[in-house]
Every structure is written in C-alpha cells, then in structure tokens.
Image (cartoon, rainbow, N blue to C red; front, side, top):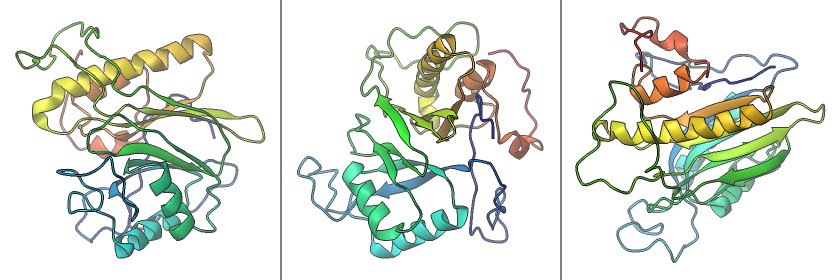
Length: 267
C-alpha cells in the first residue's frame, strides 16, 4: 500500500448509536496492505513512580495518576479490534510505560518494535509508536524554538502580546520504518496544542513540521511520509491548511463532505 504524503488515518470503535463519525466495527483486513492507526490514549501512565513527576502533575497522585487496570483493558480491547500494523499513540507517559502496557495488555499482537521519546512537555506525556514493522530511525525536537517561523500571507491568528519565545509544546515524534520487502515509511506523530485561544501556536508548529517534511522530500522525492496524531483542529483551520497546502493528502476528507467551508480559500 502506498502511503506517500498521507495526512491521517483514524478508526473510531465502540461508539454509541448516535455517534457522528467513525465506525463501530473495524473494517476487514485487506491483503498486502499496511494498516496504520492513531489513538490518543488520554494519559496512559504506568503504576511505577517517576520522581520527576511530583507535585501539581503527579504520576502517582490524581493528576493524572496511574491508569487503572480496567481502563488499560478497554484501551487494549479497542486496539486489538483495529489490529493495526503500526499504531501511533499520543499522551503516553514514557517508553517504560509503553513497554509495560504492550507486554501486559497487548501480548500476542506482535508489536516487537517500540518508539517513545520525551517530547519536552511539562506534564510528562509524549507521542509513541508500536509496530510490527521494524523501526530503522527515531528522532524528535523537544523544546525547539519556533520564534523564527515566518507566517506569510493573510488570515493568520494574532499572537498574544508579549510572546517572544515560541517553541514546540510537544515535539513531533519522527519514526522511519522499513518492511522486509524494502518499503520505507516515515511517520510524523504529533499532538498539537489544544484550545481555540492557541490557534496561533498550532500554526507555528504546523509550519515548522512541514519544513521538516519538505527537507526530507528534497533529499528523497519518492519518500513515503505520513503526518498523523491529534491535531486539535478542524479541516478548515489554518493549521490544518498548512499541511494541505503543503501537499499532504487528507485521508479523512470524507468526514467533512457535509461541512460548509471554503476549502479553496487561500492561506
């Protein structure tokens, strides 16, 4: 399956009858394809104390505190039903927490290859990857300055006065995978800053992330690159348009076919 410059893939499971988007059951597997899924697991913390996470944000307290065994089982149930070959996750405590979850709750799924790097976020969560396909390279850019990002053209969100130091809130995780047959795929797993008041921050992060994608494409025009994760934005938001105008293909465009917005409006 060719995934060159794909945007995102998401499958929603076990939703009530009134759910607006997604599927209640995973689609059947298709031969000779790679199934990729992204899932914000909302504070997946293990049951081992991390002394660097104490006080207001405490991994053994109530904010967020350890993830219950019951919730871990429910997360694993959804993951097993999707049966993705590559699973991109957001809001994972650490590599140690991910390995704990993988070994205890996803046993037998074949996720032999694991990646998770500190994203530089004060609350102690990061992006991660579980994969059946070998991982050949992993990197990220925690706390990288975005102050030199240039937003050219109209309709950008105003930056709050007094803001002079702009950085990735949670650095994207960049993971390259290669199948035994030689097919190579690079993922940018991201989790953009949330909140309508921070549209401007997502715009800065999106521009810098696309700069990194373009650098890769210049080195290898045939590279297969996917950006996926939690965008905390709608298809018509400026931050999303940065990716679309940059050449990425929105694999979830069918979700917005009934939404009235001008997708051809300039950035």
